[in-house]
Length: 389
Ligand code: APR
Ligand code: PHB
Image 1 (cartoon, helix red, strand yellow):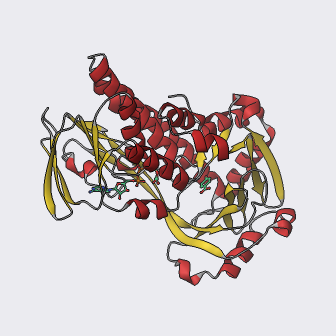
Image 2 (cartoon, rainbow, N blue to C red; image 1 turned 120 degrees about the vertical axis):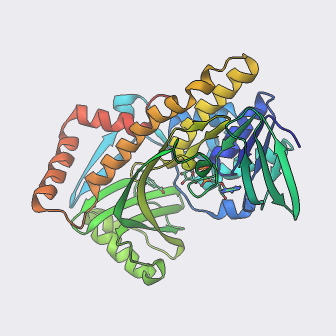
Image 3 (tube, rainbow, N blue to C red; image 1 turned 180 degrees about the vertical axis):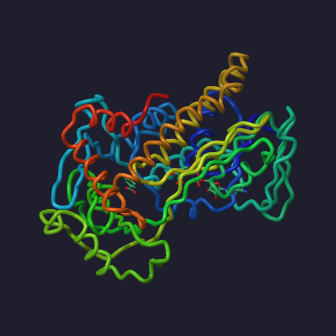
């Protein structure tokens, strides 16, 4: 089988890239290790930058998103009992959009399938060959059959645990990593959100976040030790601890209910360089991870897709290799800034095991500065709504 762009991974990155290229008449084949149902069962974040929304519109898949999303003009910060609002629109003119990654991925799968896309599910033993040449190919097994796909380019959209990044030789690849000494215990519940906007809370007992997917579905997180297991946390214990970490007036009006999903995620910052090796491009979680504070995971994937989509269009439609040559540098320039922002927000709001009284005072001073200083709020808002592509 032959295609122009072979895509590894049917998460948001791979699906969005495939759909965008399809609209320009560029042929793709996508392979996914799991089933569509499995991919859709993964609970992930749901705060989208407007740049992402524009890409979804360009891909022709924003109809339900535009209809059902919630628009957030700002966010709330809590420091113990104090709470304050930071507007995004006042300083940047742009809001963020709430729409669950699961719904977005479902919309992309529906659009791809409606277009008769070539997607192989449950592939095994995928391997990338000759990526450093102009005749790369993929081999894998699907439905018990050995398959080979010859192509011009390979998009490695296969997440942090995929094969694409590891295909780049160690003497070419440089990795940068920071692991944080705690996790986030997350609970999804069919309860109304506590407020119209998200609440990022820094408390003596640790960080908490009140988020949402829609008006009936809430997503809450608390910082927890990495040694904890979700099954050790009863729903009641979770709600009790969350209430202790947010201001009393909010705790009093929190509507609790049974969890429909409960999990613990570790926090990590990670970047690999370069993001291109010959005919292989890395995109999304395959190339970088951010801690979830700031909700940049999905949004950094979108900016990679933006650069790669334009690079491939330039190659096929304008016969220019410039976008391809510059893909890695352009994508990384934006990624590092999102990494900085996610790291900063993580450092600002969490309790760290080795934190001294001095460190705590620094955190409090920085949060107070954000509350009082318009320039600080503008810097925060510009990063939160997303830096330009
Ligand atoms: N062969 C085929 N598919 C693979 C392989 C493989 N060898 N390895 C991994 N995959 C698939 C995974 O099963 C997964 O569905 O690649 C997909 C990667 O999807 P994500 O991990 O969601 O990564 P990405 O599309 O870059 O999305 C980035 O979305 O999932 C969130 O936390 C993530 O917010 C981040 C953003
Ligand atoms: C979420 O809703 O899952 C979410 C929101 C904001 C974050 C992280 C996660 O910063």
